[in-house]
Image 1 (tube, rainbow, N blue to C red):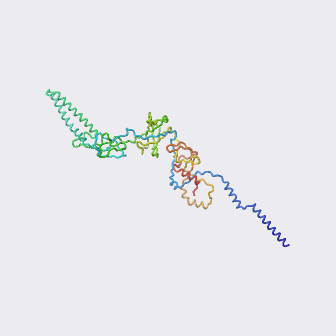
Image 2 (cartoon, one colour):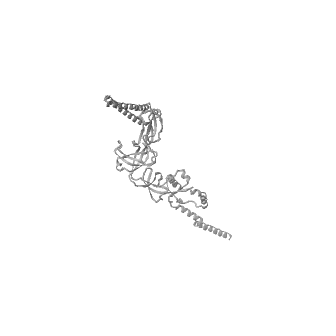
Image 3 (cartoon, one colour):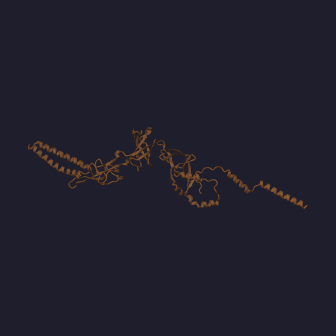
Length: 427
């Protein structure tokens, strides 16, 4: 009897264990259900939209030398590109020379100096200068004597006391002396000496060499102690204010050239600054064997740094149509599209998966509150590229932007790389 009761109790216990095991397989705790839902939600997370706003600190902006500008209006359509050279017309160039040879006594200028017309460049010494002044003074006395002789012969001839031949000889001698005096007077004036100032006590042994025009000393051919004559100029003066552009245009482009057109050009070896010129003349013959025609244009506006003989690269505007344009460095290529970055007040987009721990984030916001005020937000704006010339590219915006919006004109590549690599996060 005892054995049967013990056996029944064991059977009941085994049955309870089996039932409990089956129940565990078909039921889950609330925590387990929540955990399972979280895993399923993560696996079903859809692909996130690309971010378009990046944030940089002032230190980062300075470190990569990001520069700002605006969208400009440029004449970039319907243009002709050509090479040329800066020239100064010959009537705006001059040599400072002396009509009389001599030794350079003083030299008052250096290359690069600006001089005015009539300014003394150098002085030349020669003993012959004194001889000319001496002869000029002497011939005055001889003319006085010759005039008296002519008067005396006229009196004798009127009284039949002298021969007519003597009067004629005296008259011829007087005319010869007067002619010689006029010649000496002109020579002294050409020497730069006032004939009326020549006297026995004021004979000059040196002549001055003056500038024939306003301009800059471009070359010096003499030095103190060297001999200068008519064939040896002392200095060359160039008036760079009269610079004009000689542009070599090919035959196929000649029909599109007209007087009055504007040329934008840069120096070939230093294409930093842009200059302007206006066409005033078009050549009518080919230049040597190059099959190009010279188009002449006067340089307008700023001429700082421009010198006769510099090579240039010019763009001829064939129409007055202007288009929005930005520097080439302002445009970045991403996924086959083109973008620029614009300064914006918009906030960076929330990235999925960011922690929402209020305590941790509240602490970070407190620590970086002051720093965030100086941060700059950049919005990625899609554009369509147009023609590129003179370092600028025409752009068409795919969305409206403010008229005076600030854009990044240098360093856009860094902002794009940062936006792509970090997903817009600040770690």
